[in-house]
Image: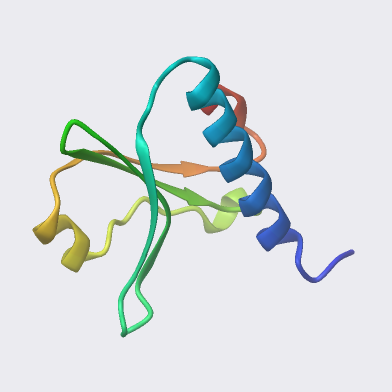
Length: 92
C-alpha cells in the first residue's frame, strides 16, 4: 500500500547486508554508484580490488542483472546480483 516500499526494501537489505558482513568479519568496503546520466547501482561491495554489485527489487518481475556499461568498463566485477524478497536470505 505504501508508495515508498521499494526504497524501504532497499534500505532494509543494505543495512542487514552490512551487519551480516560485519558479523562474519567480511570487511568489504561499501558504495553506491551513480553517473550524471542517472545510471545507478544500488549497492556495491569492494574487497581486494574486486567489485560485487547488488540491485534490490521489491517486484521480482522487474528484476534484471544488467550492470551499466560505464561501471563494467571501469571496475572488475566479480558478480552482479538482483535481490528480491523471495531470495534475500542467501545474502545475509
